[in-house]
Length: 172
Image (cartoon, rainbow, N blue to C red):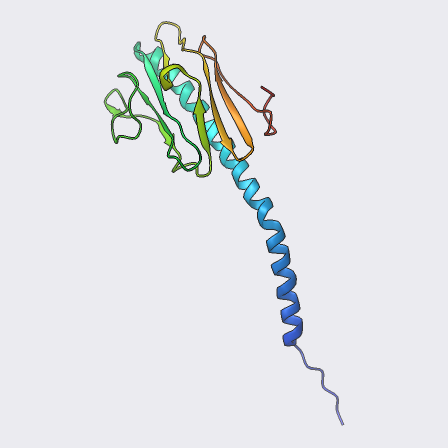
């Protein structure tokens, strides 16, 4: 008589493998969500920094004041900001914020989900002046859960990022 070896997996072996994979997936999910939130926060902060530097450059280049108007809110409240050379505008209104007649840069909570925005800027806007690129000083704070990044505007138009809760940035 010949003895044959069967190849393959039994149902019990397959179920045990699936249980181990499910436990690993459930334990890794919070870390993955935290990583995504940190990356969204970094992306939102870098995007805002770039748009503020663009507003300053446009004010100097066009020899006209350029404003960045903010509508603040939490992660689910629908915040936004946009650039305009016609004074502070309503970033919630389509085509209300223009530079030289063209739609201007900006961002919103729709693009950066789970990120909140607040500011201490007077009248909720930063206006860069054409003479030297100066601006009304203030801070815009972006948050994701317990983490936050501050985008700090100096009166001379300098834009810097800092954070006490997110690595990779100098402390505030």
